Length: 255
Picture 1 (cartoon, one colour):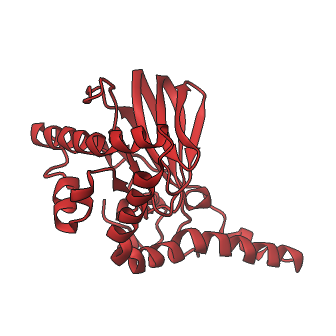
Picture 2 (spheres, one colour; picture 1 turned 135 degrees about the horizontal axis):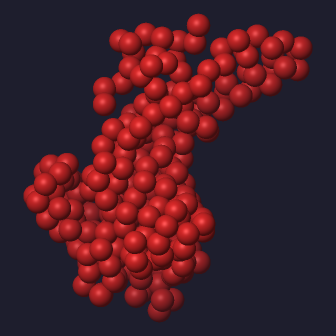
């Protein structure tokens, strides 16, 4: 009997986003610019139109998004989702569980980034739903844009100093979280890769024993319309498996 059902393929995380329609200081409607420290993120556009603005070693890019297009960005790339009209996206995240454990840093102004307590208070939402949550999400977005615009302006002028300083500040903010992230990675993405290696070893030895544990699974969002970094978010519990297929109900994660 399988003791722990498998994660999604490759131990990826999954969510669905509708980009924020709120206008920012530069007249652009969209989400909160941020980067990830160890996770690659992919946008699969399922409807509408818009763009993703990115800052990286190659400078500033404005990537158009339309139904059927896919864009992805590796760790260290600042990205900002831009609403162009009914933009809807399915998000695939590397290392299921790590983004929810804090693998993202907003482009807040340098003074906020330099103070971990100040940063945490600005990044945290007081509630998951309701008018208070919306106000806080919008204020958080505006503060991220406030710090993002000077980074973009400097890169466009050929100066990568502020961008590199932001990356260093982001790394300092998350340093204490790394031991916990390492455990999530070991039990998730690394374990998934190691299972594949064991299966290849078995097949090479002429054994099909691992196929006796075959199964099918399903899941639904545990929360709809939450306030994410980029927009309203339909969320799946990190590492959540189908309730009906858990062999031991006591091991099921809390929703």
